Amino acid sequence: MGADASPFHATTGEMSLSGIRVLDLSRILAGPSATQLLGDLGADVVKVEKPGEGDDTRRWGPPYVTDPEGQVSAESAYYLCANRNKRSIGIDLSMAEGVEMVLSLLEHADVLVENHKVGGLARYGLGYEQLQARFPRLVYCSITGFGQTGPYAYRAGYDFLIQGMGGVMSLTGDPEGAPMKVGVGIADLMTGMYAAVGILAALRHRDRTGQGQQIDISLLDTQIAWLANAGTNFLMSRELQPRLGNGHPNIVPYQVFDTADLPMILAVGNDAQFNRFCECAGLEDLADDPRFGRNSARVAHRAQLCERIERRLSERSRADWLAALEAAGVPCGPVNTLAQVFDDPHVKARGAEVAMRHPAAGGGTVSLLANPLKLSATPVRYRQPPPMQDEHRQEVLADWLGRCPTQTEVPLQEQMPCRP
Image 1 (cartoon, helix red, strand yellow):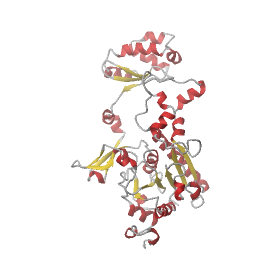
Image 2 (cartoon, rainbow, N blue to C red):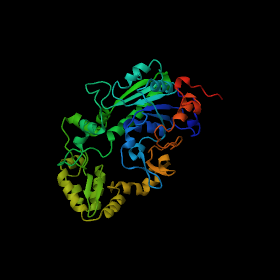
Image 3 (cartoon, one colour):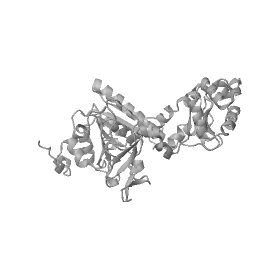
Image 4 (cartoon, helix red, strand yellow):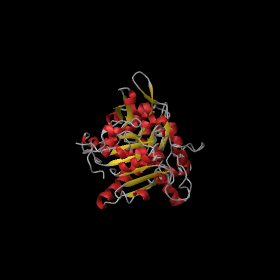
């Protein structure tokens, strides 16, 4: 299962996950971001979509892909963000022939990824317990809002709800303002990343033992896990952390400050950096003040210190301060808009934006966010743009099931293998 070569692999060269086949029954963001990561690393990912509907995010716009003449397509930027390096096939799981098609594809799959509600796939005979005996080597990754167990298991989960329930919104926002969610679906994305790591670990175990397993990963579990230092601070003290805006609960000064024109970030991480900042800013008296000389004291006297720093930084432009502080070895930086991010020379040098030709662009390209992994021997390759719905039906059935392209519209039970 999964070891047989396919044209999809043969034409791309060896990659980290070449030879791994992933059947992706997920949609929205958490599951698709996980499978996109696997696809970026070389896995053959087949995205299963409900005919006529497809992934919900295809319609989450604007913006949508436009062709060179300005004609707007039905492919949204949201959908594009998590679906490259995949092929799409339409399969209706509510139909017996659709279930049979999935079972036939699973004969050749290493991994199944799904984000149906708990028990959702079991209705079609596609639950893990139902498949385990038939496909003992299969890695079965289930992504849900709340996990396979517990009192909330059957609830639907959405990133916004999880950010609230998981505590990050209580930490985010202005101290005097309302709780605030993070500006991207970070609970979904982090769940997708943990899912990809879990899948790789399960594949490693499968390769050693021959046994697959189920991965039960939830948005809420993930959200709580990446509370990191804030969560551990609470567990150690049992004290609630107030919202600090752009401040840091354990480090001072480590926040946004206004300058004479534009805001900047000052990120002093230790006492030596603080001493260098004070010397550069002409605030040497602060370094000698016992209230501010050590980080723990600065945390205790946050308001008094930051008021002094704010007054001093407001006397010069951001560009002046950045040049002076960088020369002094003090961590600092601008607060960039997205336009400034993608225009930054370092960002350009690192290749953060990639262009891929896309059918909906009428021969033109769509711009996507690059994968940040830089592997020296098996680099990420951008082989396949985010697919159109059901774009690869004939190709996938011929490739995975050995069905001739002329046979792929024939009912599955009547199809014949291709002859060499």
